[in-house]
Length: 88
Image (cartoon, rainbow, N blue to C red; front, top):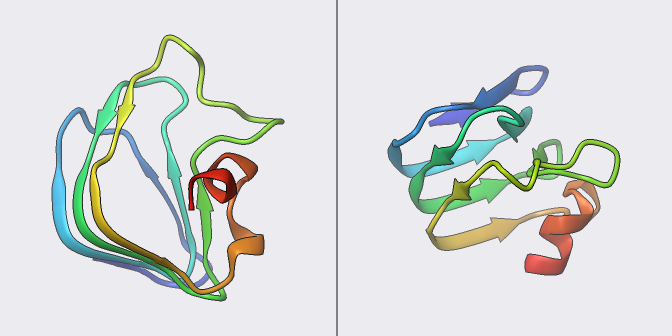
């Protein structure tokens, strides 16, 4: 799966999977639905943004967000939210 530059994709499915996700645009998770996504490789490129919650728009405590990732690579960590920077 590739998210092109200029495109925002919000993931809101209860289950799903992909061998590889490449983010040139913006990948965000739902703030209103429980989600689960299994990913082999998750690549966030220098022109991409990964939004897994932030100080200003957190994922609420009552929302479950389960995403096992086998291998993650972030080409530019400054574009990740604060919560993801602490993760990887």
